[in-house]
Amino acid sequence: MSKRVITFGELMLRLAPPGYMRFVQADTYGATYGGGEANVAVSLANYGVDVAFISKMPAHEIGQAGVNALRKYGVDTSFITRGGNRVGIYYLEKGASQRPSKVVYDRSGSAIATAEEKDFDWDKIFDGAAWFHFTGITPALGDNMAAITLQAVQAAKKRGLIVSCDLNYRKKLWSKEKAGQVMGELCKYVDVCIANEEDAADVFGIQSSGTDVTTGQVNHEGYKEVAKKLADRFGFQKVAITLRTSISANDNKWAAMLYDGENYHFSKQYNVHIVDRVGGGDSFGGGLIYACLNGYNAQDSIEFAVAASCLKHSIEDDFNLVSVEEVKKLAQGDGSGRVQR
Image 1 (cartoon, rainbow, N blue to C red):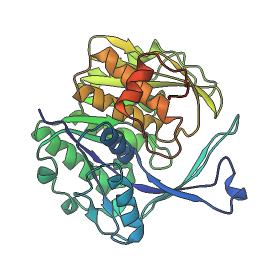
Image 2: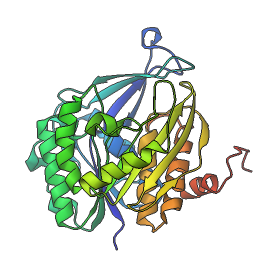
Image 3: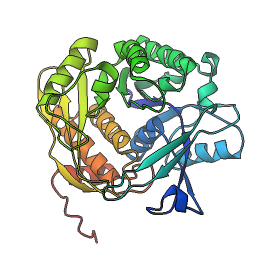
Image 4: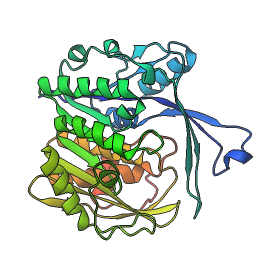
């Protein structure tokens, strides 16, 4: 079986003040690249997986710099369509203690947001592939992108690919009602669904009792019901739910659950001191896809995915730059952080 993975979405320019400075303090901004599905692609490439990222990027130097950022880590960028006038931007202010992080988007009219169906030859893109991954961010970019994503999942299923989706609801991009309508259609073609504590409630109105993310209360048992309701509604083969208990902007407890249609598998919980949490969910998705592709059982799959994401929280910028060996070592219990000599 082929292990080639295709991911589809927007690659954005990330501009962030140094350290924990606020936007109003900053005289300079660091420039890097990232985006939900691109972050997953980089994770998989670092694990040695043959992975391609699909998008539309301008042909100018800023667009090329984004493409180069993916090539650096071994992601296949040969199917990225070139065109449009601008790269989407997001500004990130990193939070600390009780002050939350903030994101400001400047992505209207970006190359991918103005893409057309003719920009993507899905039969050619999916040739030789085994897995297709997208997130709820991509169809949120506009009705055109919702239509293109639907075309993609239909082509993927026609070719027999496994399709995974991270619901990734973003209230700054669309309403809950619109998200529920669009994602409800797309999820008919999804095999593996990934969500966090809030996504299922925001997109599909499926809530976990006893959970309040604002106060940091997460009822793990309640998510069994959430996962089963999602699987029953859409026929998902697997439902993974990440479980974040927020103590502060710097310190979280991090775990996840995987429902395989019969049993519920909970990972161990990590106490995470955060360096950069952006891309944390994407690193979880990359870890889960890797584990599934390589035949891990359900418990080992969720342990690998959570360990991978735990490590991402210690790494600056969007990409999770860790190896399979590093993830396995943490998943197997070595979380001491001692110097490796």
